Image 1 (cartoon, helix red, strand yellow):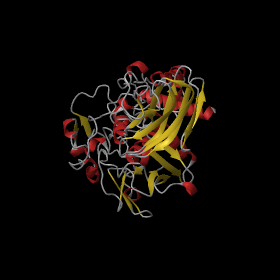
Image 2 (cartoon, helix red, strand yellow):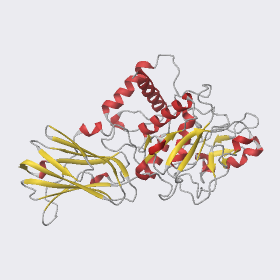
Image 3 (tube, one colour):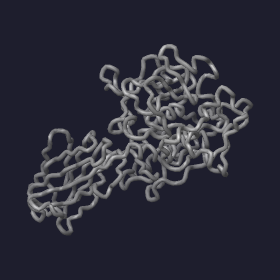
Image 4 (cartoon, one colour):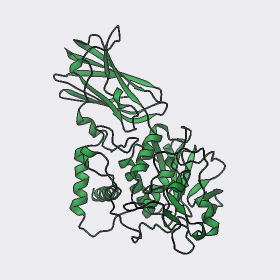
Length: 449
């Protein structure tokens, strides 16, 4: 338990340093200017992500994989690379990423991976889940010992390597996970020359290809982000220690090359890449005195979603629920919470609620949401209809459901603009994290990475 709390504290500190933990009423705020700094050996900003210049760092004889841009794996499987993958061929189904830890990893490397996974799972709309090799699905990540820190960009299909070298920190692993999710290096964006200056004469000759601009048809997601965990540091691959990358405008308050935590831009980009659209519709035998109602949960997007929560509440609500066996429901006084692990794109599921006492559906509060970012939350409240006309009854727009659903959705989730979806962040969980940060800030102890 103590180890877990220490990890949560480390995550809280990382998130706070990156501006992720903010007052609930204002949503995501401005990034903090407080950082651990490049003097901390756990966060080297100027170092080559791979073992400096060694042939093994450029090509692995055992896997026949090559590394470009310092940490991106390429090989016969790689069909495209982008700042953000376009389409869904390179995305993980439902926003869920199963992963395996190879037996060759050291205990230190395993801990760095677990901490990086915890950060991504805490601040983003995707979920990485460790599985045992014997039960791993066809498409999965395998974290394994390698000559440096490196990853493919996006889902490649089948067993997909992520290299963890001797010098990979928790922040480095977070960066590699960003690649695996579909994010490219920020400094390779087609619009980068409007924001940064590349000092070519200071870059090691054999490393200049790492600063090439991505193809013009790659997808740009959101504004340019100096604070992105996917951005190179100011002195990466420098031949003389002087900056190889300099912001064109004032960079005061930014932390280019940070490896503390995914930035708000990173979180927003992942939300947009893996966005879905969950909708709720309610049909009843009699909207004014319903003895039974059927709730249809539909994914109106081609991208799948996961961790779907349906909540029902109302004065005097006492009912039983029947479904096709996919839902898990929990009934308490005057409320029902149901959870669905995942929902395919362009798919629909349903459940039936039988009321012990007939009730007006306008008095029923209904809401559906998921950990996956929802592009249109306006249809999450359930339009109430009565058979056989299926026409919306006047005044039957229901209100947002009970906050008890937060036990299922306790992970902050960012919308496409960097804000949070309504109700997706538990005030209690945020205050708890803030208490951990403030209560322990004075302690001079090493942050586990």
